[in-house]
Amino acid sequence: MSKGEWPALRFEDWKETLATVHMWTQVVGKIALRHALPENHSWAIAMQMTPRGLATRTLFYGTRPFSFEFDFLDHTLVLTLSDQRSATLALEPMTVAAFHAAVMRMCADAGLPVTIWTMPVEIPDPVKFEDDTIHGAYDAEAIERFHRVLRQVDRVFRRYRAGFVGKCSPVHFFWGAFDLAVTRFSGRLAPRREGPAFMVEAYSHEVISHGFWPGSRQFPQAALYAYAVPEPEGFKQARVAPEAAVYHQELGEFLQPYDAVRSAPDPERSILDFMNTTYDEAALLGGWDRAALEVPDPSSPSPHSAKAQP
Image (cartoon, rainbow, N blue to C red; front, side):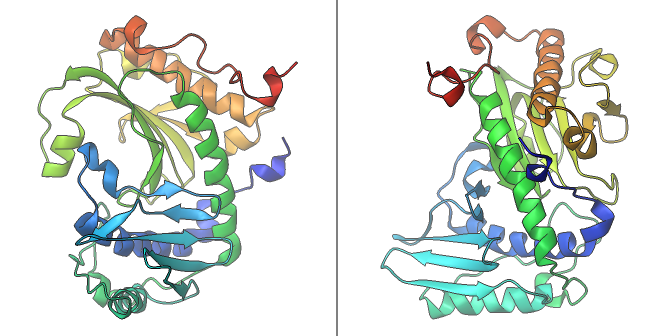
């Protein structure tokens, strides 16, 4: 696999675009919050990777289905409806306030007069969408690089997910924290967690979660992460692979810098080693019933893959 499939993604190079697009996804995510059929752990409102970008699940205005897709190849937001109609909005430099207004008009013109709570979540110093004239950058080339990274990480996460037969989330994108994630469940209740209702419900059961996020003020570089809730005793001191993976005390999770992934001889193997070893340590220390939850050799090629063909 060529290194071009794992492009550079330096936080400092596109942090303004990242902040803008994060808020754009929250505008659309808040529509999903109002119009998705409920699923446990907020799964219904998370976005899914597509070959072209990020999309909501099918949403419903009454009985009328619709969906949104951020197309990061044509750089458009696409609203798709059930009556063979669609609408698009060009993704280009514009403020969050202008994007919010344009999306609301697009929905109204399509006969979907949606209303949302306009306060962003999971970020410091939030500003209501309609008042946010601070964020307005859009670097199309940076977004395309980000999409290429997400495509690769999504593929590897799906491969990792196949090794688990217990309850497991889809591989999906959370617009609150702006991260791609996959979560395994032990099947046991967890001690009640303090915080907002959605966080209490999200961590109602024991989990080991992995994900990828492109960086933030708190950790200004793209990275893979791994954490367990509740965190078992000794997990902080666990020895995991590869060597670049470290436990971040402030964040409470293991991190593997993306730069270490893309510079590895085999980036895919580097991610799988990180996911498998952090899961192994957390599941062992947490006393998970691994024999009932796992299938043998989860990182082996699928019997239907090209590598397995005679």
